[in-house]
Image 1 (spheres, rainbow, N blue to C red):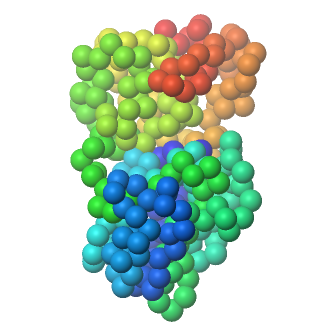
Image 2: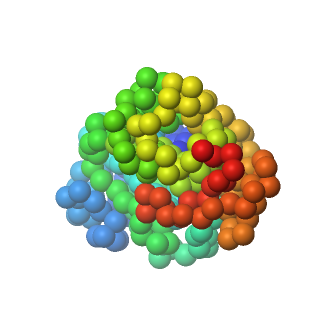
Image 3: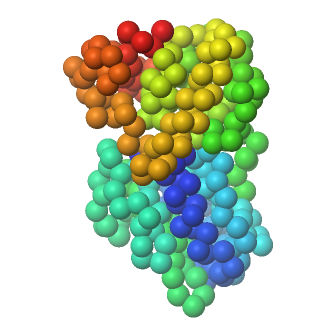
Length: 259
């Protein structure tokens, strides 16, 4: 599933379109157009626009143009294809074929080439001029103070708060579980109850998870990932993992060392 690491890979691929001019817009799926956008509006606003930058904040990919900004979200199964090449060939928990019927949005460029969003389950979306202020600090650059502010005074479960993109942008289910496992913190802890040492440990664990998993190739490469199954055992201490629903997401964690 696309989390911060996958969307950063998409951003690097999308950077190849900077400087190109949109010749045509492919927007066959009205459901995929979000926050007031329509297929007709996307075509009218983006045809003739020049891509000036490809940026990422959290799990949002932003294409700046000399007209409106384009915001792309990928849900659980969205992939990007640039000039016929997919920087990520497959996602876990997804159908990863190349059915053209899964192409929900695309930009065709003068001189050839295209950027396409391929999303089997239609859980992503495209919008114009996305409100970036609705997102918290990016998890790849968050400071300890920003993390403290995002968690402070909240009785919500810690994992639920980490998944709240308005508090911290970029972590999804796999990265949150991996970070908490590395930090030795229960996902059920009240988010605002961490002491300074625990907060510093969580900040370091998030950074380590992003660095290590980024080098390995994505959010699905965590140390916890192979045992995220019923009856799985903790890779650190061998305890049987607990399986809970936290923040609406299936959560695996170790009741022995995550306290």
